[in-house]
Image 1: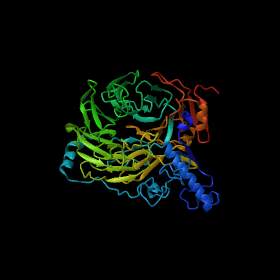
Image 2 (image 1 turned 120 degrees about the vertical axis):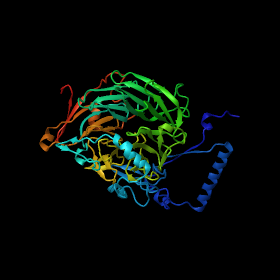
Image 3 (image 1 turned 90 degrees about the vertical axis):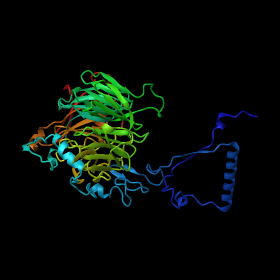
Image 4 (image 1 turned 90 degrees about the horizontal axis):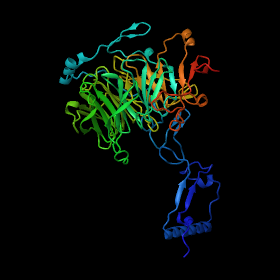
Length: 577
């Protein structure tokens, strides 16, 4: 018997291709569209006999043919004949699925009423007066602890009442400075310094932590030896603003000295290294309880851990706060009553806990959602409201944690259902809004602004669902999922791809605006930046951004960009031509 060759050992490969004239696989007249004549009866019988012989030969050899399809199919339903996704600034829905924005059938995203008016279907409602014992306790004991609302200094002094939302003209809507391609991977989290108003910290997908003085613009530093993968959350030490805690997907909590860049590991959930995906623990949600002096972190298996900031050691056992095997992506302590803890995760729930009685299945209340919950936050001043962001394109608001929590007070439809190759969108409160109604969140579905497809950052009034402002810049063409409002100034920091942007309100007059100049530092290859624009992220996970950081100050080509009304002039920072 002749030896079996390698060529005969592999099964037959059949490749299906899309014909140029083929319109749909479901059309009844495919043969006519392909320009082929129908087979006669005798020819059809011969073809059937050949197919039967081939099938018998395949069964005899025990090998089934492999079919490779090169036909164009829809990315949503995987069926041929149509395509769904972006075409320029227009999002085309899959005809087999309901509207991508509101998830309801009967219309498309372009004609969705929620796209035209964010307040569509939202019933505005003030704070419900429950007259319950818990509400009485809140008024008598917790309300006096709330700090008084300070006045804001604009062109004059404006005093805000507790029921008046922040006016639109103090919303940061203009980029005043930026650092382009600052990180080597996409930005994942932002945090403002608690005492120095001009310092912004940022973490990225590679595990690096950046420190940027956005008043001086060029003073920036990236520490690249902190973590080995994604920095998911950062929090400042409440008793020492020179150190910051960071939680990463490498399963560690690090305490970083901002002056030296040296870090120490407080907890490592993977001491034996990589043992497979079933045992690798990643840390996502994080917050600090200043009263108990503990760092709270949660992992991708549903467990909560506590680390004492005084001894820098883990305290107690891990507590299951969400479904086993699900990510706990968010933790937030109540700003007025720190014993209350809010968590959210991939099991479609947000839960309220009492830290004095923190054990599995002991949640005070469960807030169900239809899909994954990206974030959940108490309101910044009173702590009695809750804002959640879920993957079903909904922002949900509960007006009072002492009222009826079985259903949210309002559901606001907003486009943020996407997180592949993106940091998940998170709606956050404005910490300076006295009415605790203003929230900021990036938008996924783009809009056509003067021929450009832009993804605005939305400011939404959560009391009625109205869009207060949508801020954008024609040079930022990428999606901006990471946004952080300054706790004291009218400043917005946003992370888009590998770049950071600082937004301020446009208060200047036309004469002053002509003199106004943007201060923008560009890191990396200048030629690529000129061609692609500031916000391009096509090489988000493929390039190093022109620098390698090893815990020292970044060495990169620095450019300063000055923009006037008429033109955009790019000049080197050292003044060379």
